[in-house]
Length: 120
Image (cartoon, rainbow, N blue to C red):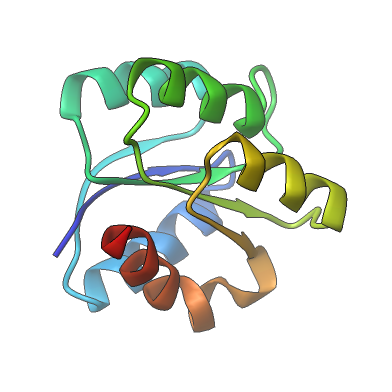
């Protein structure tokens, strides 16, 4: 079981990710709707895993990923986006994300990606 911080500007996506994670036996310890909230909650909660939306107003998920990893190089982050392309996936994986997931596949693949990230 992993403690999970969910970061997404979409209330629907946050709810869906929460349901999927909790169904898989993981504990959602925090939910953020923007990058600043995410960074604050990460520092306060020290979750074992973060699901992070790539495209958000204000700080993008890519900026948040880099800031989290700068403070905690061992952080486990799964980047999730509805704007997927090979360039974005390559950049976030090179930056240190443990997995990359397209939003239409969240329900189907999230638990698999959590298990993969937690095993690394």
